[in-house]
Length: 159
Image (cartoon, rainbow, N blue to C red; front, top):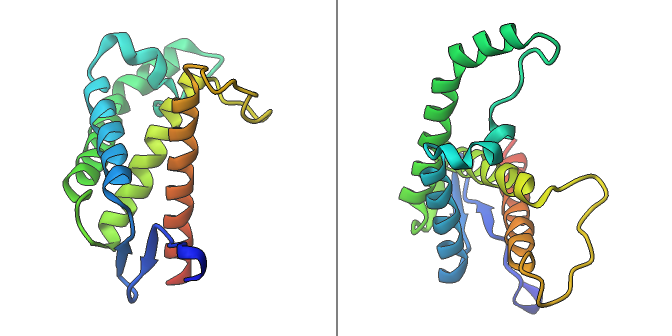
């Protein structure tokens, strides 16, 4: 490939995908997934997780509470399952379709939480000074967005 560029994910047939990530990129993926796994049960982190548990009825708190009671456990379990799958496969050189789906969902889940923490809006990324403490969080947010985009493109190319 020109200029040493490599796509993070490439299809290898219809149901297999090559992972082209270096050790540092894999370490970031592992760390953010493990951090979110820890936060799923942390009451202090719950405000940051609000985008993971959609409101069923904004005008009726009673209906929404009943909905949350009914589905919250399943949502936590499904989030945990995909994040654990990403951590378990982060050092693999290729993935099957089920694993790449888990990566897409898991990393997008991390982005939702990170986006809440950063107060991401449609206005885009704010101008940050190089020494701003949020620079690293924004870099991780953008990095994960690129990974998710690569996964989506790889999946689309197999349709």
